Length: 204
Image (cartoon, rainbow, N blue to C red; front, side):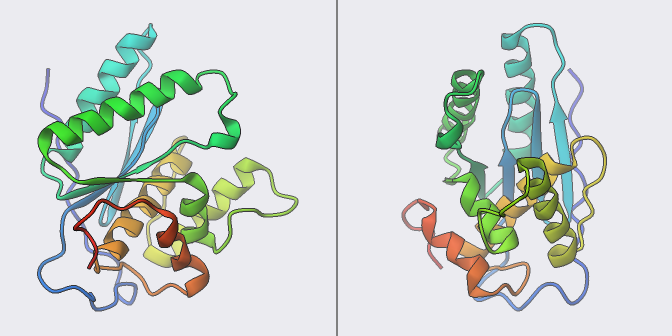
């Protein structure tokens, strides 16, 4: 199997990165919007999508886990999007939960601390609120993507743009929690950090 080449880490655009509030160098944080079909992945200045189209559920899971392991192997901290329990009745929820738990187990085995962020908190951190009256779920995802472009200068394009944008917000949340925010955001957005079960010992 060929080695996965990680994208070069590119600094955020000028004017979007405030001085860190924590001492020391910025940790390597990875955001993961885990899925069996397409997983969004993000690091500072870049986003990627891992797409699995192999025949058979198990084959797609193996592909996802293999690729995810390459992205997180040097990480200091990982933020994963959690389950939307309001949609837990949807077909495939059990399989997706298994995929997320396999990723969590892999991080645990490697000693990499991680946090699981509820989807609503991700949306709040990006847009200031979880619910947008009159908008469809896809339109809300578009607002998250727009926020990533406006706040961090990251343009997520193509078919997997929403998965990539979600991952970038998760990355930004992890860095903000660790005291290395990528952008100055109002309290309407940063309140989302309080709703995440951060692992012990990671507060700034």
